[in-house]
Image (cartoon, rainbow, N blue to C red; front, side, top):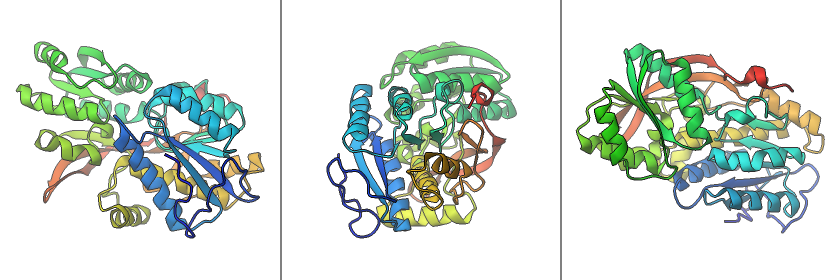
Length: 380
């Protein structure tokens, strides 16, 4: 997909093929997942970003959007095209960490800014950090660390844990184990994109576990939860928001009711920016926003806040303006740690039903003013 005139006359200029952005303008290349497995995540990031741009009404922001199809080789080709032909100033949009690892180091090495609205692999938070790379969502381990903290509070002592075998899945289990104080009944990596979990559920049943922690985003989580509910295994489940987010819950249905999950955002966070966002997103798109939509929205507003303070041609000043994070986040308090990853609260949510709609409500705070475990390894 290529977006050449996003909101004509309202917030973006029409994009000329491969032309440099005019002086004072910022040209953004968004590479995200818009088809196949995980498309809902990319669509929500895109829609949140576009909404913030439209609301700002800033004619100096230009956007090119492409679909990576959740394939690293395609993401790399798109990034090369955007940098070499489109002459973008900023890249954003990637959902999956294996694609992020394929694209971000090369982009920042060429002097481009990368603002991540989602993927936060540990390799880019520690020794692989870069002054031009800012993660606006979280470092991958964070929500899983919060799940470990909740498991401790809930008294779980023998968790069975599983996640897909790719960078974010590896970070997920590392994060849970970092905070969780109990024993492990089992630990398993599944295939990325897997949809049949009969073998894994059989192992959970036989393991003697008292709880299950899993990270299975998108369609993987839908498949697992439905099969788990049908299996008769009656162990409490905890996980990150990625497996219990707004776009997933309607497909999962009753199987998700009452499940506790962790997130740095929810639609009921009580701050002015979030109320504006939730109302505006529903009005624009006719659906409740997801975690991913909030991250896309915040990413655009971070960029717009930097544009108000510095010209993109002055990289040092623009970098400093990004670092200030002088925008009204949907999360309320927001700041960057020294490795350009967020410092923020992470909440415990519970899946509920409002009328006919499955959604989440915040029931507590798992971690306050939380950064990540890799800050000290980042030397910049």
